[in-house]
Image (cartoon, rainbow, N blue to C red; front, side):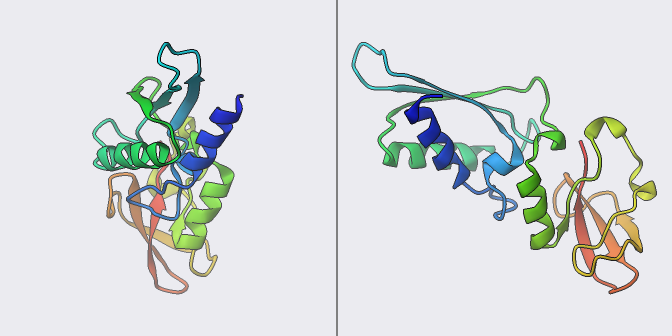
Amino acid sequence: MTKSEEEIWQILEKISDPEIPVLSIIDLGIIRSVTVNDNTLDGISEVLIHYTPTYSACPAVDMINAEIGVSLHAAGFKNLHLKQKLFPAWTTDWMSEAGKEKLIQYGIAAPIGRSCDNGKLEELKIVCPQCGSNQTILISEFSSTACKALYKCSSCLEPFDYFKCH
């Protein structure tokens, strides 16, 4: 990895997900690759970033793209190309462990298991991020966004989101 690529990864680490601001786009695992080509005819480095949105119609994509552009332009990277890759589809398996811990600290239960486990939501033992109890019940398969389900803790009686495995 070149110094420029390392710098770009560090910049991307500071860009928050618009829907869950405690997570960076690196925590989410949506950035698939960063390539810098310094051998251009005009002498301006060319940056290529491949990313995979959490959903193909994710409403946050335009905002994330804009933030990437603004952040890299401010750091001197002027020739930027963002390429969306829809295959393979994004999975919660790509989330960082640090990101999952940030979710819990933020009050959202982190994905359990791997995406290929295909457990039914009502069968999962989701731990309440508020009190740590595993006495929780599924209220709705969908919450504030399609990627989350709504649970309620039977111990502390607080509702909370669970970031679904997919």
